[in-house]
Image (tube, rainbow, N blue to C red):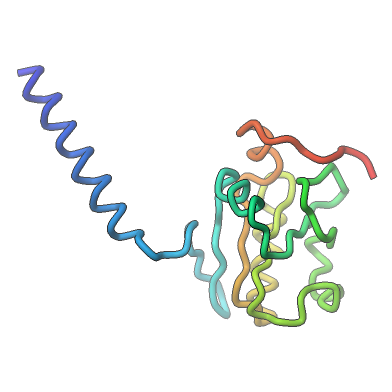
Length: 144
């Protein structure tokens, strides 16, 4: 009975991983989050780390007060001042912008704001710098 159960669990695990792999083929990474005006993508620290190896996006720290940053950060724009700082962001509203903060809540708010302002390629680091560090990735500094 125990062997049959383990065999069933193994078969189900293989079937699910195969099906998930096929469903995700060619799909953008991360979880799409629908909001008023469009959507943004939530990504995990491991995905951001992978993206940083071939960086082709603007990385923005939106946390206030400043509490450090991820290496490769291009800008610091307070999450509640995104609209006032729009000229600091890429002029092309289709350019990829990745936002992060300390825990993910401020970058979520900033992501919603950018989508509302017409940006179409916004990505948000889930868990922020806390999760980034918990996953074993270093921060560039802690004071500015």
